[in-house]
Image (cartoon, rainbow, N blue to C red; front, side, top):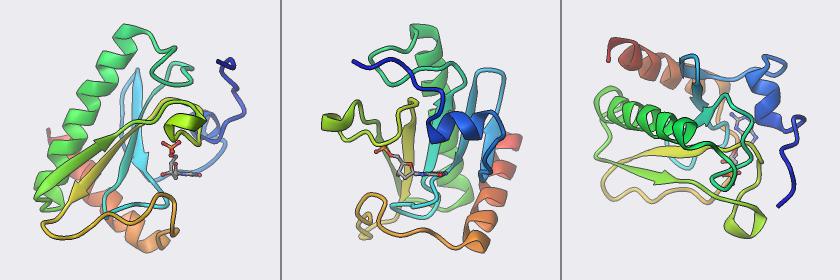
Length: 142
Ligand code: DGP
């Protein structure tokens, strides 16, 4: 497996070099909206540690990402009125991974509404900003 490349797009977001619609941050993890959501509220949860994916992350950082993913999932249910949550996580190109800093997809779902295909359409900034506001308020209160 290749080693971690600190020029990946999520590393740049983590360093504040690129913007994101942040919904949660603590000392070990960050969560922000996917700009090409498969459903409204599609959020990515990342460790701050420089891990490429599930295959090189430390166990403690992985456990922390799972805890944050659970918080984000619960916020999606309450703040966005989701009926369910899909969680996805891809590893290496053949496993479906495109950006090589570990991230967990937390995707709020509504009954009977299929997910869009991966990375099919960039969402409008005002829609993302509105959803980020709702999710971050729910996460701040949790
Ligand atoms: P994957 O590596 O296949 O697990 O998915 C990468 C996801 O990242 C994909 O759903 C689209 C999203 N994405 C790509 N570029 C950006 C970006 O610049 N900002 C944000 N927030 N999401 C991005």
